[in-house]
Image 1 (cartoon, rainbow, N blue to C red):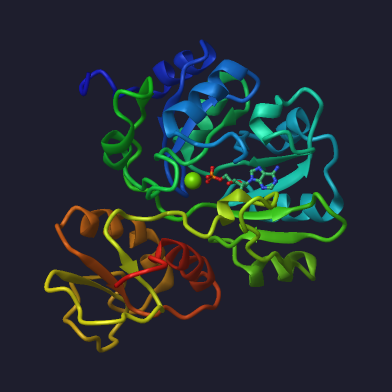
Image 2: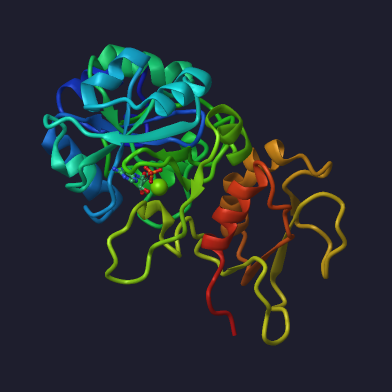
Length: 320
Ligand code: AMP
Ligand code: MG
């Protein structure tokens, strides 16, 4: 099975056209792709990821013109963002077309769309000849995969194949901007930063996390716990008690910490490098038999906002 899981783009596209599900590389994280218009394929995605169906999927396209296959309207500011940042790590939430299955959007009247820049992702979407729904290729609430090996560890045996495109260059999930309401809203920070969005279209409202139990979620990727390693991780929360003997420190830059760094996200304090390394280093420390992962503070500006967002959600709410 292990050797049968690896696929070339042509096999992946054939499998996708036949309603199968395949993990594909993108510049953000690996996506678990299925035909966005095939409900059975969508159901297979939710099942393989153990993802609740209230968490809608992002649909991936391979040209600007394809927006109209899934969206009913393309407001001016959304179009300006698309023209500036597509192809790239930006998802736009737009009023959906009737023909998009409810399963893809969790019955929301809007649809999330992205045009990735990764050449293999583009090739597979083109060969599949349909928009592809592709949430991150990991089990629900677990760490997102930034290498094909991460995908295999979590999903081998549950999916039809994996296309190996090496390590993801960005390393965190796409920025999500919603046009479901009057004003543009940033639902999830990512590599296209708030500053970049505002420079292009003016004011963008930063949506607050809305994951209190029972509330309908504007962006379920905003669940308070998400992107978590199995090992407890502490970020900007205080420890009540002593450090466990087996504590790892995930450092950033040249800060002094209570322990020497176990791994350093970026010794020079470069946020792009730190973002690209984040999930891979969390995976590595998670496998390292530690009882706790302590993470250095990261400045919350520009790309640092996305890092802070993911680390806050990865952080254990209770430790000791
Ligand atoms: P991922 O888990 O990276 O596939 O990202 C999927 C996330 O995109 C979901 O968890 C939502 O936060 C967001 N999303 C997808 N569709 C919509 C939508 N129609 N409205 C708002 N957010 C959406
Ligand atoms: Mg995800």
